Image 1 (cartoon, helix red, strand yellow):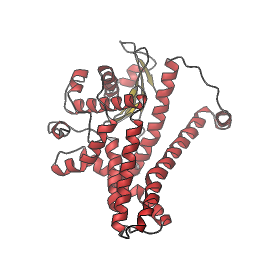
Image 2: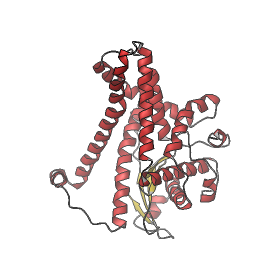
Image 3: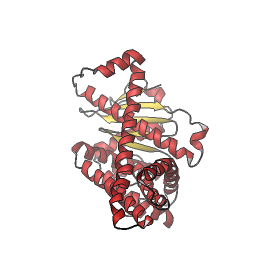
Image 4: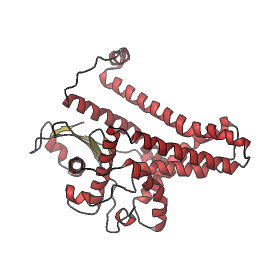
Length: 332
């Protein structure tokens, strides 16, 4: 890992971020998001969506991290579902018959509201799974060590390291899936493109390839910050019974998310030795969640970046195509 290629002194940090989706990338700029998906025939589907103005609560340090984390979960899930829908339509897949629950929800609340209900329900399930596997399960498993040692700090540290180990193993397992490997390549393309833009170079596949697939402002680093801060903070809480251990961990998660987000912002703004040391665990984890992209994947990242940078983009793209035949869609 060459930190000089990740923390570059000549770079101009931005707030532009993104997310890899199925066969594409979602980029988020200051006032809009752009989803670009490479369809089976090679052309690109591009959807541009304006961002709503943030409320005052979402701008307060520490508190904003909680709102941004929840918003990222909802937006990420919605974007993944959207990319799957675009690919199904492009491939001419047969539309599956809706289940009874979906039909009932659409009749009761309307098609748009029914989708929102299912979306938030999916996010809730993801949160329950995450809390159960990576918060409750580790502290329950470590209870068996209570017969070996009564040292509260040691027990909490074992729990923290077990949580990190379980998460890394989870990433390793899913990374063996072919579709996930391609998602990780698009993740790398996203970082290549952002590095290229922040260094003031023309956005071309060749220029983007010259940069690392690791970036200090990555969501993967945020998750690692969450786990490391949890390890340190929980070690100060003693070792009460299982109910209070679980309760204390759940109550402190918003605090940990807020702290983690502020550290992530700090990591994206400087290149001091302290920032590099704080970023190392997250960058190491990114070695698993990013892969070297090919030229076609970089073209997708570049298209997404240009879509969020071009202030006239939505006016130009409404209901039409660009000179290369790529479909553009503006969402109100």
